[in-house]
Length: 124
Image 1 (cartoon, one colour):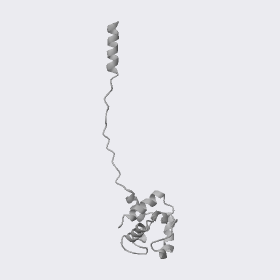
Image 2 (cartoon, rainbow, N blue to C red; image 1 turned 30 degrees about the horizontal axis):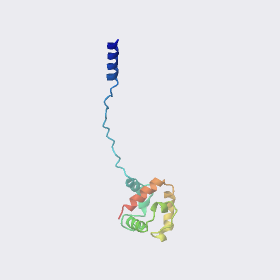
Image 3 (tube, rainbow, N blue to C red; image 1 turned 60 degrees about the vertical axis):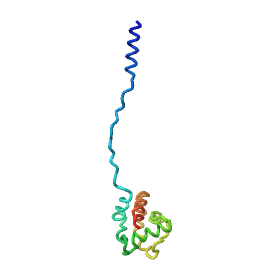
Image 4 (cartoon, rainbow, N blue to C red; image 1 turned 120 degrees about the vertical axis):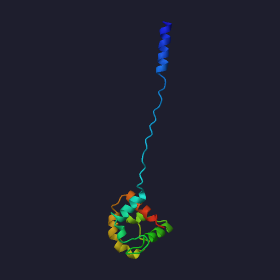
C-alpha cells in the first residue's frame, strides 16, 4: 500500500509540473498611413482646399505656409476655424469666398479636422 501511495504521489507530482510556455513571434505590421497622410488626402480631395491654397503661393487664398505660420504664431486652431467656431485670422477679406468650403469642413469629423490641421501645420 505504501508503494502504491508513493507511485501515485510521484505520478501526481510529475503530472502537475508546469508546461513550458509556447511563445509565438507575431509580427504586427505598423501602419505607415499617418494622420498627416489623412490630412493631405482631405486637403487635396474631400476638403477641396487645394483649389484655393498652394504650398507657398497665394492663389485665391493665402499659401499653406502663410496660414501655418500665422496659426502657429497666434497659437490658434485651424480645426476650430474650419468648424466655423472661430473668426478668420489670416486674410479676413477672403472669408466670404471661404464660406462655401466651410460648409464642407463643417461636415468633417473631429479626427479629420485634426488631420487636416496637422497636415497644414507641417508646412514651415
